[in-house]
Amino acid sequence: MITEIFSSIMGEGKYIGRRYIFIRFPKCNLNCIYCDERKNYKNRVEVEPGSGVFEEREIRDVKDIVKEVERLKTDDLFAISFTGGEPLLFDKLDELNKLLKKKGFRTHLESNGTLPERLVFTDIGSIDIKLKGHIPNYKEVYNKELESIKILYENGVDVYAKVVILSSNTVEEIEKVAKDLSEIGSILLCLQPVTPTKDIKGVSKKVIFKMMEKAGKYVDVMTTIQMHKYMKIL
Image 1 (spheres, helix red, strand yellow):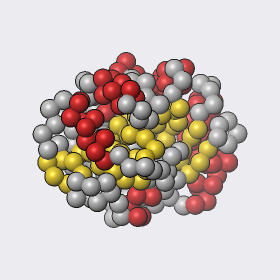
Image 2 (cartoon, helix red, strand yellow):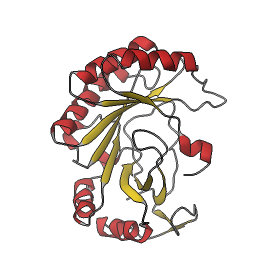
Image 3 (cartoon, helix red, strand yellow):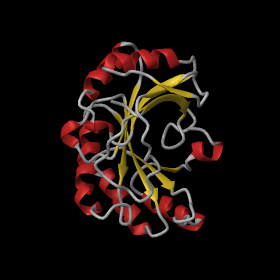
Image 4 (tube, rainbow, N blue to C red):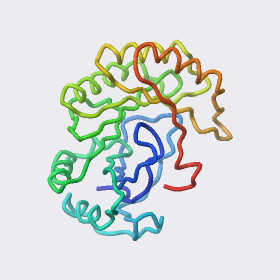
């Protein structure tokens, strides 16, 4: 049903640095080059908030998920993240969202935005826009991502767009994304330079500055790193 549930600090995007409980779902309909969530855990739950120590538990339905969230709640908790994988592939996500909101939790959908017909109206939404080099069929999914942002925005969700920046991505690509977002409404654009690995080259700060300058003509823009990787937390 789930991959894992744990308490940590949001490491990217608009609410970077906030305390979250993450509910990670296993399936995804894409295969992004930079994805770092290819784990095969099943129903593992953190023992104590922020401990990084897990145990497998029987998660049979959404009520079991809610119980684990309530157990991991801390006074500094900001929101509950539905992440993945792709959480919209979970058939009972709408039911889970409603249950958590009924109990007073703020919810946050982290999605690739390719399934607009399955959207769930959380309090916060972040859509990961794909560019050239991310996936082979990036052009096919781009309009669906924009459609998802538009639907969430028009339904009062605090939605923002996130773009992982590879060394191959161009200033022109980011400017186009910003312009397209501006036609939807006041959408924040979060640029996230890819975390370098032995196989993936980093992005120069000069390019990031130029991307921000061009995007800033159309939308609010910010840049964040994957803070959780530098802090060595989940």
